[in-house]
Length: 417
Ligand code: FAD
Ligand code: DHB
Image 1 (cartoon, rainbow, N blue to C red):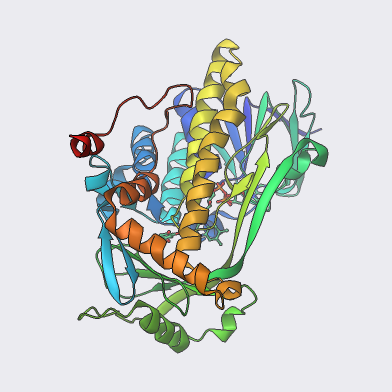
Image 2 (cartoon, helix red, strand yellow):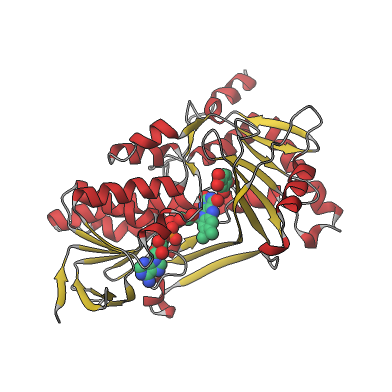
């Protein structure tokens, strides 16, 4: 075939997972090719997440792609939980020994990674078509695709499936080899980007009887706001006026806090689901990011989890491709899944605590439980610390069950006298 080429790692998808993996490998001298179905312009402007865990931001710096993030991103030390017209600050940094999150749009992070890859000369092809994975169960997998009208075969040592929830990689695994666990939610998020300075310096997660609302930001002049809506809603049914009216109603605070309005630059509705497919490996195919798991967006874990997967995968690939050491690859799925399930629980918990389940509206017991949980998180240092450590991101290497927690926390020692 005229278009037959070879690389060590064939990476399908140029989202956060594929691009960070490509960068990690490039820095270690491993050859990789990134194949992306969409155009560069589309990928660079796809409006999505905006909260980077401290570990994600640190990794981008270590990979030499953190300069613009450090100049233009905003370090946040806390978030607000708002309900019953009152705001309650969760001091993330104080509760986690000084850890922060970085507000920096996924679009910007993706632009930085693409620019760095193209500048280095490493291969990245946009607008590839008909991607198909072959020979995954043997030692010489390959990726077939068409680019600029020419059919290609890319022969690889390993394939990384980083092509998001609707990609082809997960589907290349025989269905009987994957265990899928999932949950649909009876609501969705309507998100807008508004050309107006943020109304609050920190993120505001609001629980209201009309539904959840979130105030976030993109730099000093842009606000990013979200509303819980019905999953069947058409975005056209939400005029700008209706969106602002609803945001005002849900986010109202009893003091003089004001929500600033501005022109709506973009709006879209995102369904919410939890989804995990296991294992994250099939032969020489390794799945990462949204290709293999989805979290509901409350708590902003999706992007961070994608990056955490490829950090583990990248290190394992380097050990394998440099010295034939397969231990990291063999452990990849189990190692990554531990973090995945922690994030799945956190995202589900944040979602359940803050949204209105239409089915539970007539269930006073459910309503009271939700209220009790909110109050607990905002009044107990232990509960707030649990939220905070998950929000800023747990350490890459965490304690395991066979390493018992034998240290009694300082606070408990003091209480015991
Ligand atoms: P993706 O970003 O989906 O990247 C996959 C890439 O693969 C894409 O560029 C895609 O075009 C490409 N691709 C697909 N099929 C093929 C193919 N056959 N061949 C080649 N390439 C292919 N998370 C948050 O934390 N907060 C949010 O507010 C938030 N909002 C979101 C809104 C939407 C609409 C979506 C879909 C997700 C949102 N997320 C959010 C989740 C977060 O953006 C994702 O978790 C993150 O993008 C995952 O990165 P990824 O690289 O795994 O997948
Ligand atoms: C944003 C998205 C989230 O899912 C979240 O929990 C907080 C902020 C954002 O897009 O800014």
